[in-house]
Image (cartoon, rainbow, N blue to C red; front, side, top):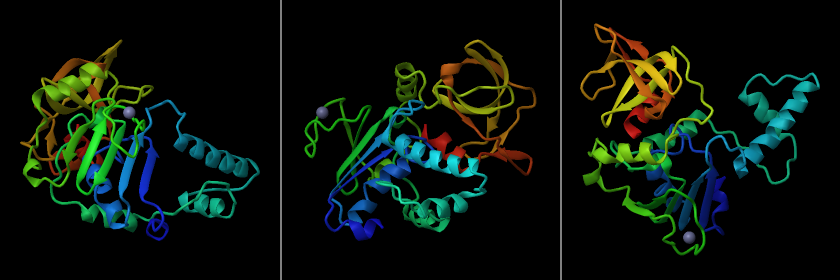
Amino acid sequence: MMQNSVQKIDTLHVLSDGPVTQYRNRANCFLLSSVPYTWGLKQITWNYSERAHGKGAPDGVGGAVKRMADNHVHGGKDLQNPKDLYEFLINREVENIRIKWIDESDINVFNEMLPPSVPKVPGLLKTHQILSFCPGEIYYRDLSCFCQYPEMCECFKPTKMRMDDSSNANSDHLQPDSIQKTYAESPSTDVEKNEEYTVGKFVIVSYDNKLFVGQITKLLLDNIEINCMVQHGKRNVFKWPNKPDCIFYHRQQIASVISEPEPNQRAAQLTKYDWLLFNEI
Ligand SMILES: [Zn+2]
């Protein structure tokens, strides 16, 4: 679709929400500053709506689609899986909304385009706009601005970065102060504002500029007791300590709720997405 329609289009603006596991991560920074150029596009902007606001353009589209599906189901029909929903929607003429089916293999094509290492993008968690004007290069900033577009404006202090700089790629740790800054300036960071912490849930928690994986064992107002696992070096291998390591953390230290790690021999490993998240923050 994209390849066919880009002949007359030179700019791609993406509006989306900002889940770290999907769009707001360095892999996507790499892809958005490379792939669209191969389609003939000249400029790309990616704009992330703020969590739990529900007022962006994607929410409007999502809401319209959801209403149609709800009405259909209320009329006694079934929609049992994504394919049913897709078939239902493409048979409706919806003004200004195009429905596309994206197969897992379509996604894998892009996964395979990723180099073995992609540089970290410090501060990405609070970023709401990424812009690219030439292949391999991005600007990113806390809020979107188009006041001088297609010229780059200096509003909200954009940071420039090359995504194809492999010398940068092995910087596997964040600048020590950058996690601190993220948490200090943006208390909710990547936690859904209305996300419920409950006993038993697994989380990534930040302590002393390091990240840990643990399970919530107790809740006390804004303090959350977490039993942290021990990571095996830098690998995706986590074990429970011999003695539970339960410590109270402030809820602002929780970076994200994750799935229960999957058992792997005598240890456990994070799911693919959680591992990405763990390395992304
Ligand atoms: Zn501006």
